[in-house]
Length: 313
Image 1: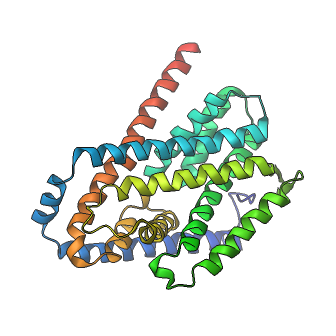
Image 2 (image 1 turned 135 degrees about the horizontal axis):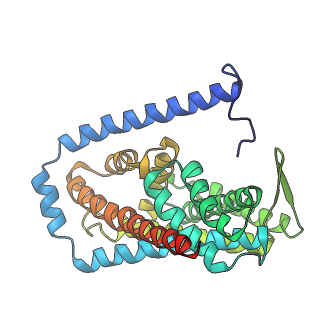
Image 3 (image 1 turned 30 degrees about the horizontal axis):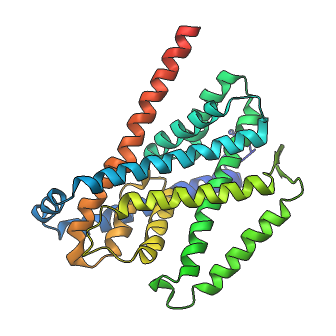
């Protein structure tokens, strides 16, 4: 969270870093689209359509259910963050609403730091929260999401996916020790200075809860795609996990809306050519259940929230 002025001099390091970040993201996005074009042109769309028609209804329903579970867990990050920052000053249901709407919309539009912060400000400001408190909630919610990624990666490494070639337990054990050390360190009240903003870190109990919520969220998000894969082409769950996490992280770094293009490229590159038609059909369905469904629900909920707010005013 930068505290620099938005009107920094043209030659300032902040401006150059920002420009390099955008150029790097644009280059990654362009490379992903080029690779995706190469993969897709070698696929027969008739095979993709056939794979789509073979998707059982119960798998699609399972994917939608997993997506909604993931969104529920993402909303919990806001509840935990709000409880840490403002205690009882806002109801838990407002924090859950803010988290669900923010994640449902920003996961589709991308640029989480911008869209997520703007949406949270719009919702939390109606409860009288100031910009500094909202910034603290945003930071702690992001901290929880990061813990979720770490927990899932730790579990995958300790479980030994094939990609680690037998050495995964060592880094997995190291990450596990770091997570335990973090919880122990947070047993006493801790604060973090971010420029002029002082952030009270979550307690050990809240941090442990964030880890649990984050682990469930990531597994639900992964399950929303994994359940759509046919058994004949689906790798073991533990082997699919690092592929999925890597594709999601690459999509976030690229700043592409919902990781579009980047996510698909990494997934297609990780599967053998004969399984890519089934995979592409599964990804297209996943985009509907995991991306489009929460976006539509969150957009409708935000519209109702705004309408009710205007009526009260």
